[in-house]
Image 1 (cartoon, rainbow, N blue to C red):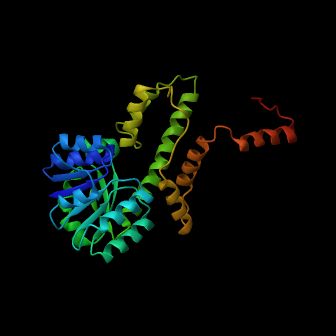
Image 2 (spheres, rainbow, N blue to C red; image 1 turned 90 degrees about the vertical axis):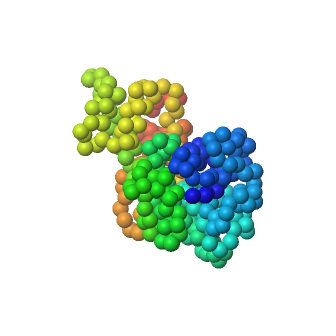
Image 3 (spheres, rainbow, N blue to C red; image 1 turned 135 degrees about the horizontal axis):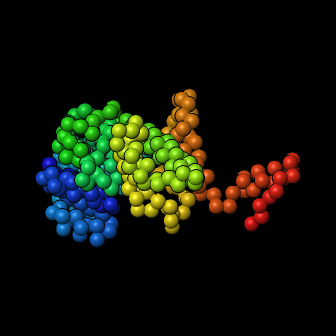
Length: 301
């Protein structure tokens, strides 16, 4: 099947390569000339502009967006809608907020363009392992694009599916990432406790390897954790600063809006925020309070 791809960063480039390996004809665009050259080197066709990209595709056209969520996605969608026509399809494979997706889908419908949101998980491993795809949109559009999803997924019959109408794909991916926050936090805390139990001198990589086989906490995330511990068990050179892409925040906001308790995901998000405060005023004030009421010593900088 023929497909245009916009955004050839690491994940977009890996997805493009998987599609090319699957026999699809792919035309790629990225503002970075090196990214365009790399796709051409892997057997794809490169375009130097969105106009050129659209012109290289036969109707009905299908274009996959792998660009950062927010304003960049809006600008790209606006530009494409001026170039596309009835029967064409736009697939947003980025981490867009589902509310933005609903708005964009409504705009696309005014042009007769199908807007499909595809929550995509798999990271840098997706090229070889395949991607988990949570898809929202019209049934007819998704059925037409089925060969693309079947190629990107771990297998044609698993790891992907339509989860609902427009916005549902990005909503499912948002919750997926919220769960991911909680899982990551639990693993991090557990291994931290083991590390601090110095009397047993645990080999954290060994423990992780044991848990990977037969344990109820085994997972791909644990596999990756074991790999990280094998390379750098002391986490030397890594700053205790954890970023977030925004989807954990959206998940917590959605839980509040729906009156659904989500303490684990919420606390995991708060821990990430806390990790970025190198000079915590709150912690200093806590120390001062203990000194005021109990005369407890204050550690000086």
